[in-house]
Length: 209
Image: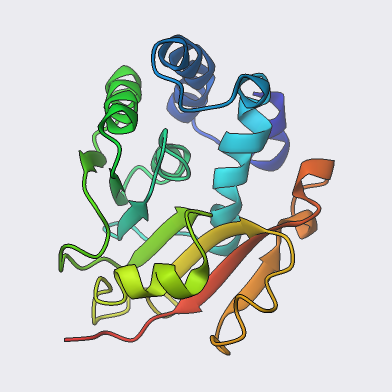
């Protein structure tokens, strides 16, 4: 928890309690259904929770915002962001049923009422959202193909509706076809070594009929 309070000192008491519960919940469920590596479960707050909250350093979701987390795995980045933004609606999807089971159990254990999680494949539905978030599920060209029809037409934020994508390494080639994509280095916000190559990529998406 100390690492979260270092960068997010203004958490409410309820948020602190919810974040503090994550370690026990994920340790318990990860022992039953492996969604996080054994190495990473020991560094849960840095490598999964704080990493997920890197998106919050780029975007403050307004109340009523709708966000879809594509390929959420064990619930990242959606679950930590749902704790941080209780007035934002989060829809978490993954193709693997057992991962969604873990997400739903964690959400239940936290008492989160702003999260819905389902086994579902991106690219198979036309639901619309303000923002589409994800954590390195595939390369950006394929990701855009999956979700290009899933943004709402009306913008409620200073940034245009679109993608907020957590990824690391040199993305120059991967993003070469997307001149509007903006890379935000998480090392500008978090001083831990883990974040040296980690980024949040923001890319606006035009509404498509």
